[in-house]
Image: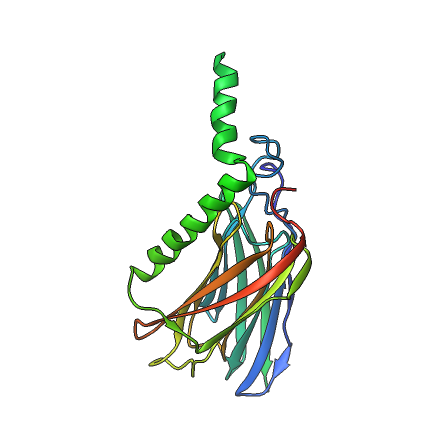
Length: 110
Length: 146
């Protein structure tokens, strides 16, 4: 609902990697992704949707997702990145009302 | 008909179309949605794979993986992947914006599907070309209209 903050996202990412490694990143955020067209009665359940998710690596956006009505509840994404040096990651979700949820991670390249 | 009732009728007409009408709308609007991405330009078949379960037990959580063959270099990479449902109330599933930082042009996610249908993925390449892949899935329990 509009008054409550978004849930804290969960990120699975390796803490360490070697230069040139491909790392798998899994992200999950609990969210109903309520499209508002459910139940065959208008506004039976008010619309409540995340609109966008972004992944920034060392400040630059490396991946973004625009989430449509057909994105399942608790949006989940898996992607594969090549890592060359110790990197800071920032994951942000934006809902249609302007609220955001954010998580950060660091991958250390020895 | 009073105001509230007529408003309700209009909203029902827009939002909760009878199954047949919703399907017809879905089938037409998916082509419109794809054309909005491609601008009507040629789309190649192949060079990418869209994976869905053949039978989705729960339409509310259908695992999807899309992979485009691409070196993912600055000069040659996938810019975007758009996913469309052909028989949902609205065609838009998600659009992914990729960069050469990705090791491969692959994204896994979960979608919801109202009923048995074909899902279409359209990839936009950095040289301006388009690719397309499709997958059929049967849905045991619909995930949209609950």
